[in-house]
Image (cartoon, rainbow, N blue to C red):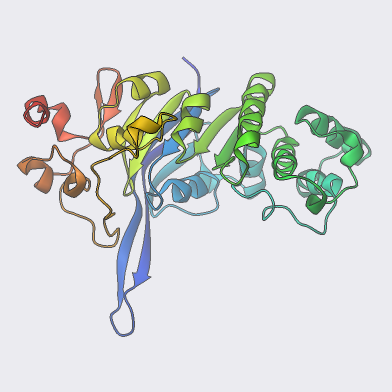
Length: 326
């Protein structure tokens, strides 16, 4: 079994949100008791609707946001006991929009070189050579070294962001919607590049995405988040072949197919997403779940091991309630 490189245990993150003038503040539990293990060489995908807590969790793993409670460990060391530069040496992000994450006033060469300067690399005479080598690895010709981001396409800019993230040889890369800002024709190129880099450089990925086609293509394991909780976690093939949680089933049913005869898919979720400041009692998914029964309305299910997956659903213990709706 591969070594666990990131261990998230009981992590929560609460924000106090204003209710308006003279109405005080209420807590918003953006991440609510998350347990997650990322093993060396894994590609773990976090999926879920916008606002479910995916990016907040990623920011905590990167050390950009302290958890309200719980622990995050990198190679067994608590992240709150690590120096910022040590965290950055091990973990690097690739953001959603490559243009907004790149300084338009800096050349490509200086953008990719910056992490070497920040980490005070001891061989500045080798920087340009290393940057040009990394550019070649990510598919950018070295002749673009002195160009600027606005002179390149969206796909090329994302390659710059990838080169910058990898120049210091991190072991873990956190990709927040790495292809959603790109043209469809370019998305597959970037995904294939990430796969190649994983094999060549021995990388471990945490991918944040709502695009299930991307997840199925690149991930080895999927964790499904809903309203701050992980509700299902399984190997990618297992989850896509037989989703266990009703929310996972609805997400997979929402994927458009190229068959025009099938029309727009019906997820049976309705339009209303719960208010995270005032979440439902019991299982937070129960108001949108077609299989919900009385226990779901009062008791919050815990994430438990069930055969080939982890799942937080009362139906896993009471399959007859699901069958009664068929």
